[in-house]
Image 1: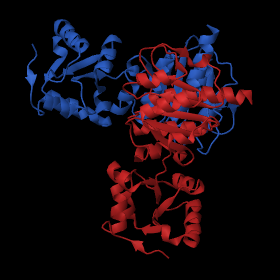
Image 2: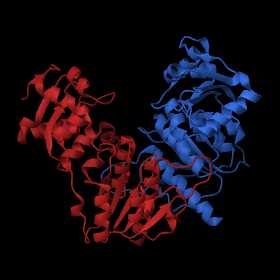
Image 3: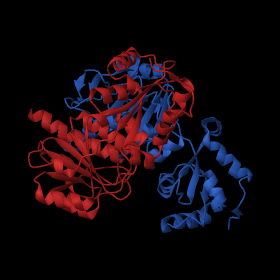
Image 4: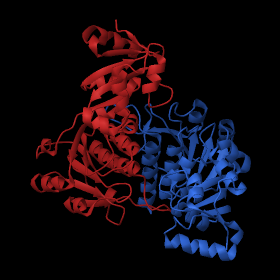
Length: 269
Length: 269
């Protein structure tokens, strides 16, 4: 049985606490995820788990306790049992549920996408807000999407806010990192229909017959799609609007288009 | 010309600073909005403005300077000119633009909705997250919606995060506050088609022919729609999902349905 850790200065705990900073996440290739649902999702999606952190005093869920018991048998070294004070020290949100995990980041490159790749993908150009990024992952998973392509200098997909907003979807999706030029070069070589969402006038997003394999490209919250990425798209699209606001929230716009794609595909059967 | 306020202890500044707390917003009936776009929207939508706060050292936008000059002529008493230190003390977000306003809250009651009321309305049951609330206002405005009905004990629509996320839409929409029972009673008396979004199985949201006058009811993030409100709906609807996550973000779900309604209406012309 794992020993109860009661000190914030425990070296393992100190290392985990450092994961709040992007620099330390980048260096270690690890991230911290908390909550019963996301940890179970990480486990069932076979994410590479480095540590399971749990707090018996906080953990009420039977499903979570079953998971702990299962891991205690098959991989006991993964478990870190901590007291409430230590768990809350690590916690990133209020009302912690007593279950968290340290997980290895998993990056892929554009090379995995070729002429035979199927499914719905989203490319994000320099997205700034981790909540938007996580919410897009959540919707992308809801429409059965395959993965995300992070272009340029955006926020960290392993930022605690992005992880939380994704509601576990981050473990079901593939995550690709690419430079903008690298993407444009790739697009020239690979036949992969690419639709870019813009705010200005373009084709109505509902006027398109979307194929089953598609990349939806979205620009950053402030600047939209960069000219070079817009130029690489097969088609630019926009969402019609009335009213006084001049744009939709980025994750809202992405979700509206993703549901149009998904609705078309499910209607065609 | 207004005198430059350089002290955080200035009584006017202290009063404005108190608006960060809901209790003080409730008591005063005022709220604080910052940013060039939202303030201009408040002004052009004829919101009842109590004060315009501006910081010459931060304000670069010509449109904003024109507004200040216009107000200096017609209502000079509205203006509070402050230095950078004071403006940042009041600021709720980083990178302040140097323009903000204190505005009177504007609440209406269900009584304004009768058999002849037109347009798209959204009812929110105990919504908890001010970012979600503000984002729904932004999308509702984008589809030409009329207003929002806040039911039960939810977050404050005048919370700084909600104001910011609404991107000025809060000034273009009508805001109704109602108890849940009051809403159910009202629904019995008034002929106003009401669609309730639920996570469990219900009619596919795309299978409905939406009328031009509609209330879309959404439940809270944690608990969904309360049984009494669900019972008051003419039709329950849900958004089909694949993948591993078990629900969509509330503002995403609302926006996907709102765009379906809007797309149907604009196609019918």
